[in-house]
Image 1 (tube, rainbow, N blue to C red):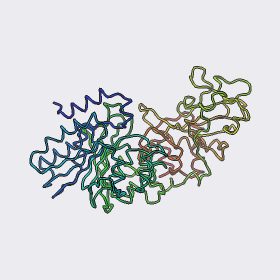
Image 2 (image 1 turned 120 degrees about the vertical axis):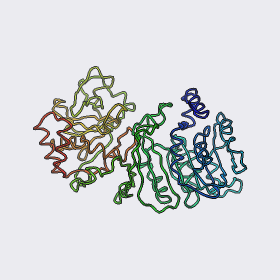
Image 3 (image 1 turned 90 degrees about the vertical axis):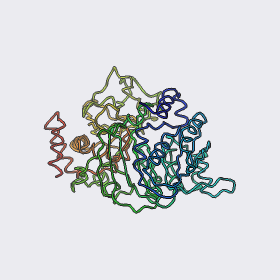
Image 4 (image 1 turned 90 degrees about the horizontal axis):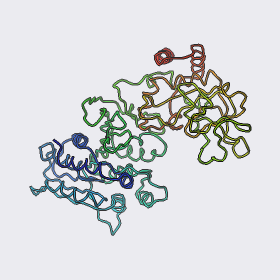
Length: 494
C-alpha cells in the first residue's frame, strides 16, 4: 500500500502541467529512491544539521528522518533547513515534516525562497542575509534547468566562485560550499555533468573540495523519474566535504525497484583518469576494466592520427532559403542522420521529410566539404536504440560526380582538415566505433543521448595503420556482423 507522501507525489506528478514542471525544473523523488538515498549516509552522532534544497513535498527529508526515528542514526538532535520555492508544495512539505516534531529534538525551518540567492548571500557574508548553518548532512534532488550566461543566477554564483550552466550543478556546488568538514551530501542528479566542456568548472569545484564515496547509476534512461516521462540518465552521488579520496563504491540498477542491484568497488583512477585534463567522471558498470582501457594499443588521440572531428556545419533552420527537397541543377548533396542505416549511405531519399540537397553558391560554399570518404557519427540516439555510438561511412561514389557535400548539424564528421579521409581509414574508423567495446567505454563517461564532437575527441583509438588495416579487412568482407567486428577488434588490440 502506498504511503501518504507517495500518494501525494504521484498526484502532483500526474496533475502538474508540463509547463510548470519545466518552469521550476523540479521532478519529485519516488519513495523507493528516497529510501535508497537515505541508506547511503554513514551513521552519525550528536547534532545533525540537515539541508534539503528543493525539498518539494518532503520525500527525501522524510526518508532521512524515518531512518533516524527507526534508530538508523544516533543523532541526539536534528536541525533542518528545507528550501522550496513553489508555494503550491510548501504546505504539503510542512505537513510531511510536522510528524517528526514530537520529541523536542527536531527543529525545522522551511524557507519559501530561492536557495541560490539565499546560499550565495550567506556565503558572501552579506549584512542583510540570514546566515545558514554549516551542514553535516544534505540530501537533495535539485531542479534541472539551464542557467543563462547573463542571468542574475550566474552573477550571484560568480560572487562565491561558482561557474556553472545548470540549476542542478549550482545547487550541488552551493551545498558543497555550505557543508561542514566531513559533511555528507547525497544527491540524485543528471549524469551530464560527468563529461563535456561546459561542466568542467563544476567538476573541478567538487573534485577539489570533496571525495566521491558512492556512485549509483540507473541503467534505464527513462525509469528514475518514469512518472514524469523524463528521458535522462540519472546518478545518485555521495560526496564527503574535505574527504580524503579513496576507492569509490559503484552500484547499478535498472530502475528504482533496485531488484537487480549490483555493487562493486573501484580505485579512483578508474573514475577520474589521472592523465585526463578534462577530468571526466567515469561510472564503470562492470568490475573489470573495459577492453579499450586495458589495451596498450588503444592509446592514440585523434591528433596523433592526424584526424579531425567536427559537428556538421549546416544548421538547416538558418539556411532554409538554400535547402531543396531533391537534387537539382546548382545543388549539392545534403546529408542528415536519416541518410545512414548501419554503415551504409542511402541518398537521395524522396520519402524523407528532410531536404536532400542544398544550393551551392557564395553563401553556402564555406559550409560545404569536398567530396570524399568520411566517417560520420549521429549526435543523438533514441531511447529504443541499444547503441550510443552509431558510425557510418560516406562513400563519394553514391553522389555521382558531386564535387561538394553538405553535412547537417546532427552529424559528427571525421575528416582531415575539412577534406575526406583515405577510404580504408574511414572504413576502419567506422568499424572501430561500432564495436561493443567502444560503446561500453563511451557509456562510462557519457550519460545522455547526445554524442558530441568533444566526446569523440577525448576517446583513445588504435594507431592509424591499425585502423587502415581494419578498414581494408572490412571492405573485403563486405557486410559485417557485430560478432565479426568485435572479434576482429579483440584480435587487433590484445
